[in-house]
Image 1 (cartoon, rainbow, N blue to C red):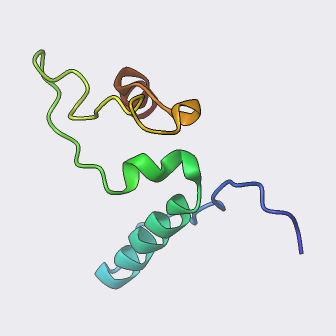
Image 2 (image 1 turned 45 degrees about the vertical axis):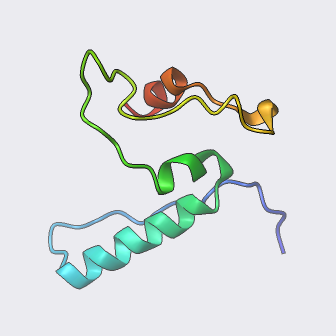
Length: 83
């Protein structure tokens, strides 16, 4: 058995002829595989807000106050990764 790299496996591509059932299976598989990668964990259950001058980080909060500051990510870095 190969050693785990900590990265999610590659997701299959959608085709032009997807059904609702096959799309739901694809979406659920993507959510599951991304949850295996620790770098995606803050985004799995996140609720993205509309970008505005008063809300430039779309609702993402600063997690540097968490106990594990070694892995803390500032909100501007989170949103930069996903814009």
